[in-house]
Image 1 (cartoon, rainbow, N blue to C red):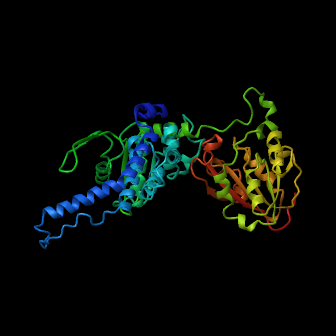
Image 2 (tube, rainbow, N blue to C red):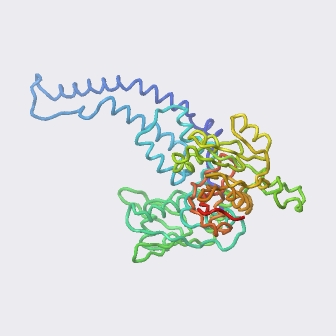
Image 3 (spheres, one colour):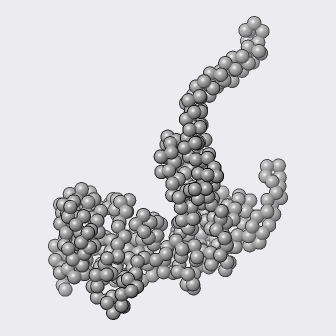
Length: 455
C-alpha cells in the first residue's frame, strides 16, 4: 500500500500554522475597518474625478469609480474569503469527501458567521481525524457504485472476488453525472494514495483515450497553465455509444480500495468475548445481546420521518432498546411505547425517563401479538440479527409493521430475510460512526400478514 498522504494533525495546525482564533481575530479587525476603508476609497474616487476635470466641469466622460461597491458587498466578500482561507490553509480539499466538497461549496456561497465555534462545527472532524475523513470519502464514493463495496464482509483484508470494474452511466460532457462520479472516484483514490487531486486535463485525456492515466505523463504548458507531470492513476475507461462507461482498476488500485474500505469498516463487536468458550455462545446467550451500538439521533429522525405522524395512539415495541432513543422519539409523537432491555444500567436509564421496560433478553420473551409496530436496532454481529427480527415479527398484530436497522450485509450478502420480502432503504455511509462502528447500515420494513398468524 502506498504511504499515507501528508496530513496535518491538530497539534501541527496549532504550532505550524495560524490558529483559527488568530484568523478570526484578523477577520474581526478587518470587518471593523471596512467602513473606514470604504470612506477612504470614496474620497480617493472623488479626488480622482477632480483630477480629471477643470474647475469642476464635466468632460462628458463617465468616471463611476464607486458603482456597485457598497459596505454590504465588502462585508460579504470578506466573510466568504475568510471561510475559503481556512479551507485552503489547512489543505482540507485534499481530504474532504466528494459529498463534503459539495456541502462546503454550498456553505461558502452563504456562510455562517465566522467564529471559532463555527469553524470547529464545519471542519472539526476533518482536522481532528484527517485519515478517517480520507477513508470515509473512499467509502462514500465506492458504496454508490456497487453493492459489494457496501459490504464489510466482502471488504475484509484478503477477500477475493472484488469488482474489478464499476459501471458509470452518462459519462459524457462537462457536468454529466458519470463524469462527476469519475472525478470523485479518482479524487478519493488520490487522497488515499497520497497523490495530487485529479486535474481537468487528466479527465479530458481519459475521455479521449481510455488508457491515458495508466502511466505517468506530462501535459505541456500553454498560455494559462504550466507544464505538469501527472502520476499514474491505475485505472482505464471503456466508453460505449449509449453514454455509459466501464471504469477498470489495476491490481494495485484494487488492493488499495480493498485495504481502505477494510480499514474503514473494521468489524462489529463479536457475538461473544474471545475468552469465553464457544460452547457458551449458542441459543439466546445474553453475551450476544450485550453488544451495543446506540442509535444516533440523526438516524432515529431519518427512520421515523415518514411514519411519526401516523403512529399517535399506536402500541409500539422496541426490542433491545438500549438507552431509549427510539422510545423517546416515539413517545414524543404520541405512541404507546414498551421496551425490552437486558442490560440493567441501560434499562434503568429508560425507566428513569418514565419508559416501561421488560428487563430481560429479548429472545427469551414470550410473544404477545398485540403491537401495531416494532421499531428495532438489533445486534449487528454475524447473522444474529435474523433471530431478533423473526422473533419480533411474532409480536405484531395482523397487518402490523416492523422497522429494523440492520447491517448492509443483511441486504446484499446473507439473504436471511429474503423470504419476508422486506423493503430496503440504505442509510448514509458513516451513520453509526459516533456509536463506534463504520459498518454500512440499511433499514428493513416488513409487513405482517393481515390474517391472524398461526404459530
